[in-house]
Amino acid sequence: MVGSFNSWDGRRHPMRLRHPTGVWEIFVPRLQPGEVYKYEILGAHGILPLKSDPMALATTLPPDTASKVSAPLQFEWNDQEWLQSRTGRHDVAAPLSIYELHAGSWQMEQHEDGQWRQYNWRELADRLIPYVKELGFTHIELMPIMEHPFGGSWGYQLLAQFAPTARYGSPEDFAAFVDACHRAEIGVILDWVPAHFPTDTHGLAQFDGTTLYEYADPKEGFHQDWNTLIYNLGRTEVHGFMLASALHWLKHYHIDGLRVDAVASMLYRDYSRNAGEWVPNRFGGRENIETIDFLRHLNDVVALEAPGTMVIAEESTAWPGVSEPTQQGGLGFNYKWNMGWMHDSLQYMEEDPINRGHHHGKLSFSLVYAWSERFVLPISHDEVVHGKHSLIDKMPGDHWQKFANLRAYLSFMWTHPGKKLLFMGCEFGQWREWNHDRELDWYLMKYAEHIGVKKLVSDLNRIYRQEKALHQRDADPAGFQWLIGDDQANSVFAYLRWSNDGEPLLVVANMTPVPRLDYRVGAPVSGAWTELLNSDAETYAGSNMGNGGEVNTEDEPAHGMEASLKLNLPPLAVLILKPKKD
Image (cartoon, rainbow, N blue to C red; front, side, top):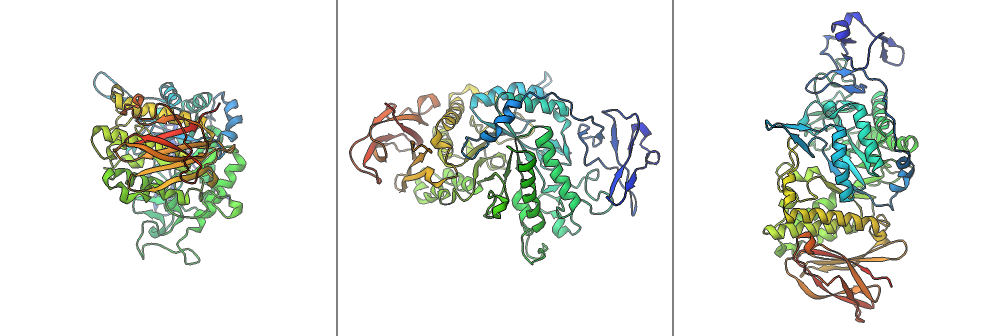
């Protein structure tokens, strides 16, 4: 063990091996929290470059790469009320609406010389929490905040699985941030990366001069897409190391959930590899059996050790049973990201409305498999970077139509079965792609159209939380009923969402810029229906076409219903209606 306390001379503090565990240990007297240290390892071919501590609880600020001696987390938590209510809040029948953000680029402070400074955790809490409360999200999801050498990796190429990055303050500062979120009734989900790690010489790569944490064969151990190394989760020590990391965040920092990154790349040995570039499993197949065992064990251990928390899979294939309990042969995740819905619906929205009739199925196909897993509908950071355009810039048409399309798309998303996730900047229609070195374009909040989108997201979240029909039966096919799914000619969709008590909500979407007057839609309840939301309303900077806030049924059967409504459908807009109670 080397550091300034011994002039970085490894001969002064050799570590001893505890046979047969493979654990090396040392006690160094008089070391204080904050002391900087690394490991000097004598490998088979000589002394290796100095290594950071894989188990370090704190680190120095990048580009420095040393570990810091850290006292146990000394923080007085005040979130007992939240922790006791968490199980109910994370139930599949509860509303779950997630605001995804990058802590360093959500908002920054600009100095007089034009330089930007990232906020620390306490400053971020003061600004972010009121904003998230105003928007009505139930949770935030932080892109990886574990220490990572390269900021341009957004945290996904991390090396310290136990240490919050020093970029935003101390471990106590991060604990204070989580505590403040909980006291404001906002859950905190962390991105967690057990799939791969970077090749930096001070990190885990060739830790003792051999492939210790990674697979020895590059066909198994090197990730071609990201130029990273792959954890050998078949090794008991690596398996235990990653389990400990997951529990560390959930138990010590009171984190409410982990979103596991790149699960598809972990499940398949031939992920993103051509024939001959991968090694089959012991049965000759492409499945990574060690990883499957790890993921199932992870979810079982989390359920036992951190009850009430969630584990969410970013999994992009048709792997069966991702969110099925392990006892039933599944992987045991609480939720899975619905990447199919995201790809299909965005492709539909990118079409010029005149062509949408030919792509009608792209918006309805997700309802074929919507209940095969417990899904989260994700519009994440990956959709607004690398030349993919921002969410509003994906939309076709002129300036007005782009905003109308965005409002219609968000309204469709919030009424579609599945929990919700939206990346920062999308909630007010940022034109520019996300850049991790710049804050969001907050100056846009001077303009009515951008204020309108933000107001819409706030109202959608409010209705989503209040109306049981929109969240209670997300994982139950009986909670959804098509009325009109085949009107390609008009690009109109209409469907019902049902609560457990049999209360319906009617959703009607017009995905063309042509207003549809006196459009008849079947209604399961006779009498007056109230317009809960119209995405074309003036308050959202729309054209304010609609039905005057209320419409009465007529005794004319339609779509299998004995009564029907004659509606005016605004251009590029979604209506949400509810039977009026006497």
